[in-house]
Length: 109
Image (cartoon, rainbow, N blue to C red; front, side):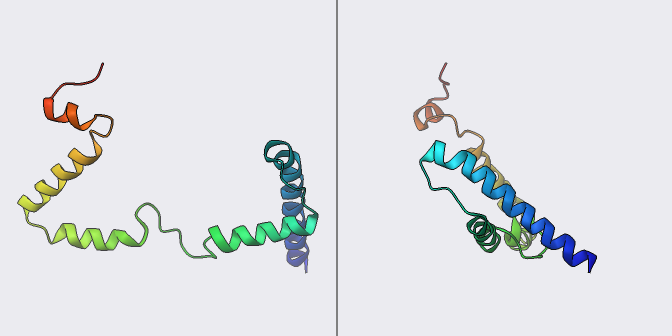
């Protein structure tokens, strides 16, 4: 019984905090509407549906693609691995340089 009461109080507090923060920020910053308490609870439920994991373990960086790429990497021969690493290095390590500076070997000052 105590746990149920605690959960209800926690949900009510989260709804109240959401309503107060929304009504403090959104109308002034974005000229949006003010929320009622029940609308704030609905907004929390919507964010739960859209963004939270529903008790699933967090996948971490890489998510469900990690096993695929790990298997792919383990099946590459050393030459393919080096080619792949070089391709990634060329693509991601020089992101600030334009294509003309990559080709000429000069940098922008």
